[in-house]
Each structure stands twice: as structure tokens, then as C-alpha cells.
Image (cartoon, rainbow, N blue to C red):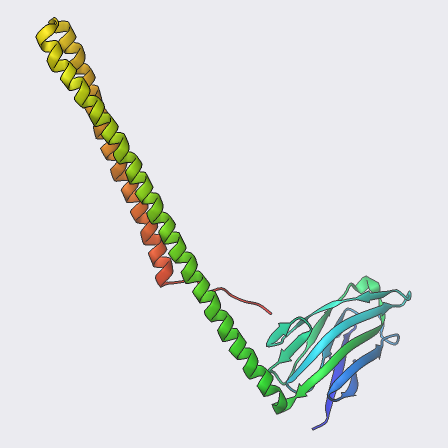
Length: 245
């Protein structure tokens, strides 16, 4: 099979065979030069690196304007994989959309590439890429599980600390209330009735504070339980990340 690369030039009629340039190719490094002086009002450029599935390195794409200025440009590709300069296509119609400013008025485009494999010779690269993708997904899943486990441990530690702090507060209030109760009993035997009423009111106030602390513990336990349930749900149903070329 004869392999060729093709540059399509859109001057307003879209990409079409009439406004295209072909170059014969094979494995190895190429500096493909496409002269564009005969094309007026260039709106877009599309480069098909091959007429079959292909694996290659795309090192650099440069456009020279009608004024003689040279610009390095990027591209978007319908590739299976792009890793640094390596680009793997698993489609028989591989193509790159060249990113450039129409005000640059391109007069020439030079594409520096190194072709690795065409046709069925590309399959080993495709298979290896799929293995790497699966390995990457497995690593990402393991990392997600580790992050969820770490989050669960954090929530549990926070819950333990919060409960301990509340229990300490209750113990302090209970000790204070017990001291007041003892003082009240002593006061009943030694002081007038108005002192006894004062200590009764103080004891009632402390008992109300204890009730409020117990209610606070209950609210905190509910909040911690909800957070722990949310983490467990995420662990069972991890969100899948979408990737783009």
C-alpha cells in the first residue's frame, strides 16, 4: 500500500480534495513543506498525516506568513493517544486541525515528523497504549480508595476528639454541680432560707447547662454520622474522571 500525507486548505468552501496537497511518505523523519502562496483568504488548515492508521512523532509545525514571519503553531487531533511528541491514530482517517490566526496570512507550512509505523504495524503501539491506559486507570482508582480511606480516618478522628471534648466538659460541669450541691446541703443547715434558695437556683442553672451539653453531643454525633455515610457512598460509587486528548 502506498502511503501519503495530505494538507487541506479551506478558503471558504470547506475542506475538499480540489484544495489539497499530497506528499508521499514512508517510515522515517520528514520535513514536509507545503507552499500556500496560490491560496487566497485561507480560513483553516487540516493535515492528514497518513491515509491509514499510523504512529508517529510530530516534533514541530511552523507557519511562515506572507510578510516572512515564522510562527510555531499547535494542533488538535483525532488521535487515540498523545504523549509528548508521540501521536497514535487508530482510525483510517487521521487528521490534525492546525491552530493559527488567519491574520497571519500563511504562505508556507513546514511539518517536522518522524513516522514509526503504518497499517497493521501500528497495532503493537495501540495495544501497548491500551495497557498503559488500563494501568493508569487502576492507579487512579487505588489513589481514590486511599484518599477515601484517609478521609474516613480523618472524620473518625474528628468525631472521637469532639466526643472526648464534650465528655470532658460534661465531667467538669458535673463536678461543679456536685460541689454546689454539697455546699447547698451544708448551707441548708447553717444559713437562712434566702441562701438556700440562691443555691437552688444556681444548681438548677448548672443542671440546665448539662442538658444543653448532652444535646450538643447528640447534634455533633449526627453531623459526624452524616459525613461518614457520605464518604462511604463515594467509596462504593467513585466518580469516574473524563479524559480528553
